[in-house]
Image 1 (tube, helix red, strand yellow):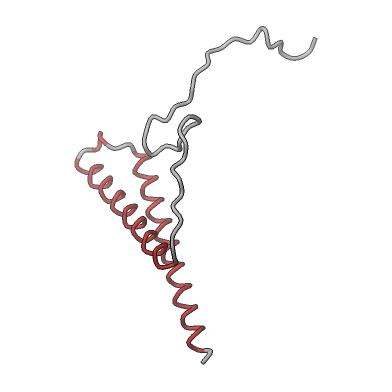
Image 2: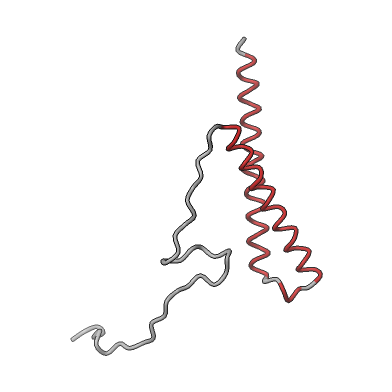
Length: 109
């Protein structure tokens, strides 16, 4: 008989658990409900607040990495930097598009 007999395979089973608040929620932890914005202005303001929180989180982790290197994991700092950079880039693109749309609308007159 070719192949591996499942009866002969033995091993340990372990449950994958969320051990850090920045990790993706696990099987037994539901995602947070998504909050729908009432209008574009509200969505834009909430998004900018989220960009600001990402920037602040990265800044705090960077300061902690300099003052107390053992308290910060390198991958956490890298993830925070990437998240802050990506969210700022997306916000900049949205603002640029809104400005361009406004210019297009005003030039139609």
